[in-house]
Length: 199
Image 1 (cartoon, one colour):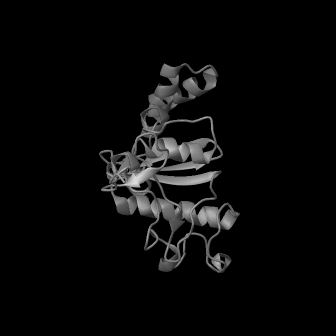
Image 2 (cartoon, helix red, strand yellow; image 1 turned 135 degrees about the horizontal axis):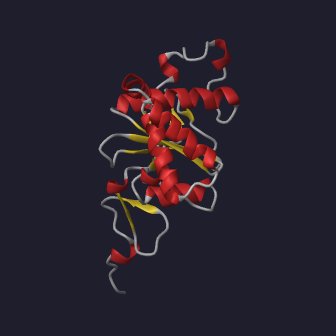
Image 3 (cartoon, helix red, strand yellow; image 1 turned 135 degrees about the vertical axis):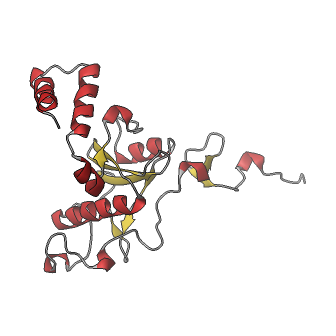
């Protein structure tokens, strides 16, 4: 990042009164702060005004419900044994494949962090580090013997998506019945569409 951009970012941050435009400018500068090599390895932060995440005033369950409707899907389990990936409703991880590049978001007690990746595999590596951090800090129930492994060196069984990922399906595969608050699998008729014979 150029010296000029660093000075601009510091100026924006130090002003203290961020307007919506200044906040967007700050987010864009933060995104540009990573060099190309760093961005390839770790993904890039998505500015909040461009993330596609719908903020809520409720708890994590309300956050999940609203954001599932706009294409995000919650990912509750991780790794071979399906250990917890977060502690709902305070800590939630969600994915979206509805953009040009795969995205992940981390919700912790109302604060969100959104990331964009060049590939699904890169996103999985990022979530491996998130899962490890959550397990080590007790924010999620993970492998009991995690302390036996150095940070960043977990065995393959402790990394990657759970074999039978029980996360919510992408929004394109879910439809809502009229007036229902819960999703129905595609191909399932809503109760109002079921024809019942008269007696």
